[in-house]
Amino acid sequence: MEAWREDARVEVGTPRNRAVLARLLLSRGKVIPLDRLIDDLWQGEAPPQALSSLRTFVCQLRRVLEPRAEGRTAPSVLVTEPGGYVLRVGDDEVDSGRFERLFRQAAEGRDPATALRLLDEALGLWRGPAYVEFAGTLWAEGEIARLEELRMTAVEHRLDALLSLGRHAEAVPELEVHARAHPMREEGWRLLALGLYRSARQGDALGALRQARSYLAEELGVDPGPELRRLEADILSQTASLDLPRAVETPRVARPVEEPQALVRCLGRDELLSVTGAALAGAEAGTGRSVVFEGAPGSGRTQLLRAAEALAQVRGFRVAHARTHPLEQDLPYGVARQVFEPILCAMPEAERNQLLSGVAAPAAAAVWDNAVAGPGATHALYWLAVRLAERGPLLIAVDDLQWCDPESLRWLAYLVRRSQRVPVVVAATRATGVAGPEALDELCSLLGPVKLGSPPRQAVETLAAELLGGAQDPGLIEGALRLTGGNAFLLTEYLAAGDRQDGCPASITRWTADWLRKAGTGAVRAAKAVALLDGPAEPAAIAEAAGMELDELAAALRTLVELGFLAEDAPVRFTQPVLRQAVLADLPQNVRWLVRTGAGATV
Image (cartoon, rainbow, N blue to C red; front, side):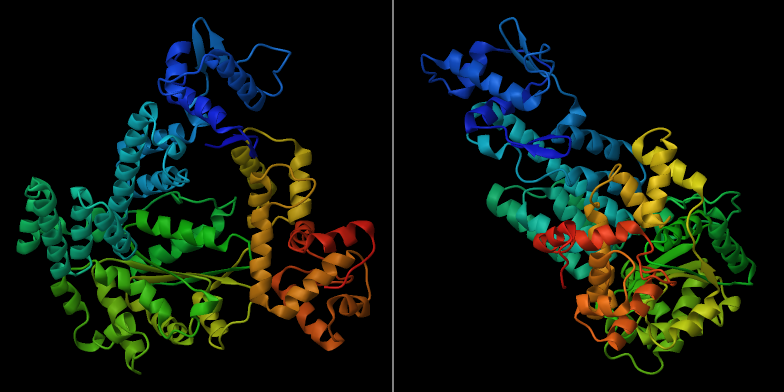
């Protein structure tokens, strides 16, 4: 049982205080008579002083729930009514209430993507079993069982949404755990079998249904319900209704759209998204072209790529997505595997074999076992993309090209140079200032670079109004722009965290540390030294603070400039003041104390 006030956790008090609060929460908005409350709290064995003790607990709770009202105004949250007490809090002020609202919204909608988003948010509110402290009490039993049933149903609805979106690779492992942890829930077995079937694992799907049948027979002495029996018959006959819904499995007929219906913020840079729209239209007309969004870390590259994916889906394109990572740079054809594996797994075996036959056959090794793909894989992967595009236009979206493996870079270049022959568009992002494989620059020149700058002032005002509610003081906008330099990520996180005159939002601190780590040890030490000195300083002073030789420091500073963290001109300084705050926030507390006192420090 936890209570929060203005994003800060407050101590409720003794176990008895928490029990009073929990009991009132179960009946929030309704008056609980004193005798009923006393009977529940002491489970029918109340001591003589129970009433006075209860009043003491209530007074202590009021100090926690309404500290400003104490002694000045009548309580408005924990209210005394004739014959009892009532807790007046809104549903959204209680995690269980918010969870139920989000769950209802997800259940009422028909869009699996929206349902998945709502259910992820709802399930994220759970920090453990509901009312776990009071699991042995009669008054909490019913509510505990009700909330647990809702949680289990929400988990199953979420997994169902993943399957509806074709994300079997994510759903099946979770379903394996869920079905075996809760074997009496037939819906878990049904979803597991369906996910396995759509992953081209028909035998495993039937095996899961046999396990369900065996468990129900041995433990309960019953046969599976009609849903499981129908699913088993449909799998055996390979009924077409088991395949993905048409909206996911088969691209819709392309139709012109006047405005990009992006599902993410473009921050006033819709003209950049129109480049993708032109590329998609060109692919439909047989004159395809591709695009790469280039910009400093945090410039909004990924947001524009997501918007491009949404626009492609509206136009009836099949969208295949891949995201690179430094740890996967040495995996041959890793990006190609991300692109094709989900599509192929969702297909019936006969259709998949047809796609991977003939000239495309070597692509199977790249997709299923990227360690043994032979020299013909590049051409085979090209033909695999062609065959998919023949069934409907295809968008291949690759985030963070700078960490793409060399084999996938060669395949993408091979595909882009021949993209005018087929309705295929490659849309990608690249973080400037980050070193990549030798072929990276050549591929980006083929894709057609689109440079990202800062969002316009009007877009920043709109963003602030959206995040903070209504029009904001121009001074806040000016301060946010000054501290963040108009960087899209920094600006969004800064505004979302509120007006931060002191300190730095934790999300920005983590983000800055992550990019510095990727830039290398030298860049980390140089950034810390510049942050500590914070002002015009000779290179020798920075090198001394960083414990680096001058030539080593020069290379590190050059990396930070290319990354967009340091300004190009003298003196050496951060491009955005919030970055210095973030670097300092990541330093040990004693080092930051030295900075505040002006004593200096060495990293």
